[in-house]
Image (cartoon, rainbow, N blue to C red; front, side, top):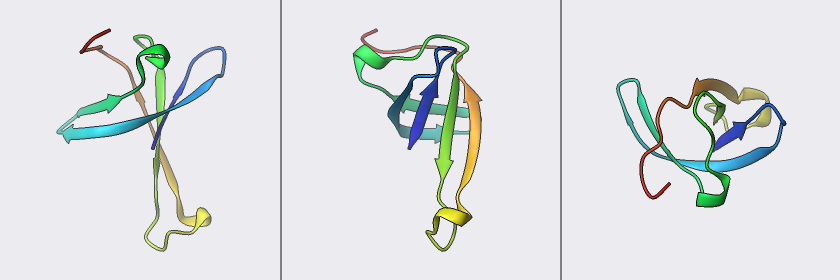
Length: 68
């Protein structure tokens, strides 16, 4: 799961479609599309699927593609 977090601190869920090297393709609904340079937080499940073992990675929106 990917969460978009803007300066207004609103959170919207997105879906990772593909990872290719340093490129991460993420899909959001059109009305919740994040702006360029917005921080995206990626929630990574741990090995034992417990909440205590989860990790988080942060990336930045660099480009928007699609219907936008």
